[in-house]
Length: 172
Image 1 (cartoon, rainbow, N blue to C red):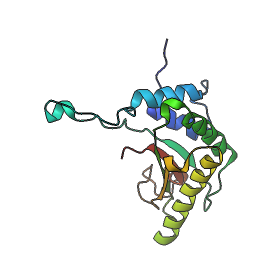
Image 2: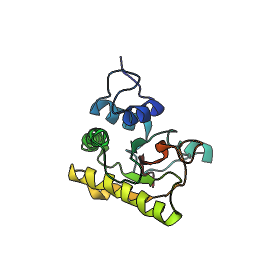
Image 3: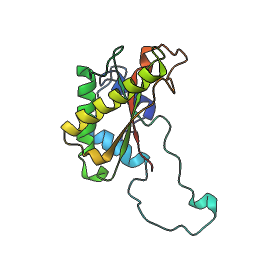
């Protein structure tokens, strides 16, 4: 029987240090299968003969992200974040994902000035990117971008969950 990884559960798994509601943590192979089955990362060229509706590519699955949270006013990776990112780095070494690229999106909560939050969010994104490249992930496969306090994950702008980095498949 083949397991299916729910994108929301994947984000909870990564945010919780590797356990989804006390279930067995996902393996690197399961994460590879999740990305391969969720995205059309293999098609780099092609022609579609048909209507625009028949040829449109499906949108990326909602919630397809990896979440790494941070302490207040910090871009330092916690031990938990490093453990989760190590699994991600292993996944990136799989030959079946060798063409996959990821955007490393840094965010803050609403504390601080806009300028400060932009700098901190960029530092968080770079912290994750540097950690991953230190584990052998090619820098060409990652793009670090800071978004400041934009796009909070919760309705409370000061919620610690908003202090994060998300790794999303780069569909460009």
